[in-house]
Image (cartoon, rainbow, N blue to C red):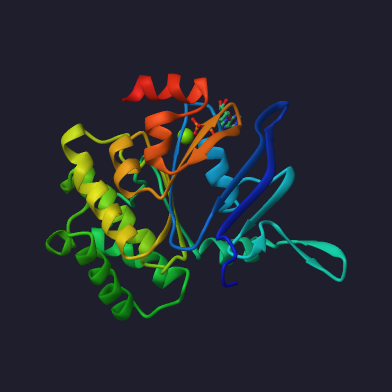
Length: 255
Ligand code: ADP
Ligand code: MG
């Protein structure tokens, strides 16, 4: 799939009941790209990420992720819907980090990170814990491996959540406002880890209001509003001279 976008959305639609939340989203992410997404609350950013990893069905348009149409395979001229097993398999290739870290409260950082390799990938425990240690070291938490979530700061917990997502060697990482729940003094340590990941060449979609991160690390900045992509471009261009009044209004509220 050389050259093919990692994510290619064309006219993606999605509704909750009668409420249309995505109204024709056009969006693409190239291999190795860091794609930052901003937009007002309720504009459909989280829903779009959930469609990308197959947690919500796409009701119209086309959404190709990692070279496949999410949710079904076209074979012999017919659509074959994915089985739950197929969805689960697909999701192992995509790491997701949420605003709330959702760590297992009764397990150590190490066990949180080793969990999916053991229970999803079937890796032997010793090997999974060794791998987990490597990923914890990568996010600067080797010394905290045996602590439970409540013994860690919010920033450290979020770094564990990132290590946990990385443990399955994903091809694509999705971040949904990963620093929004953190005290301001803990934001930078998480952004630093994400920046390192970007420099390592990871393909990332990052929904964030951290404009400084988008400017410094992002290759593209996309502005979502009312279920569509209003504007997309290099972060510096969009931030210096957005063409759309809604983007301008939003930026002036967060800058
Ligand atoms: P954002 O992440 O940009 O804040 P969301 O994708 O979370 O936006 O939400 C988009 C719209 O969909 C909002 O109006 C929200 O109220 C609605 N919504 C989100 N999740 C659900 C759900 N599970 N059921 C019904 N409506 C939902
Ligand atoms: Mg959201």
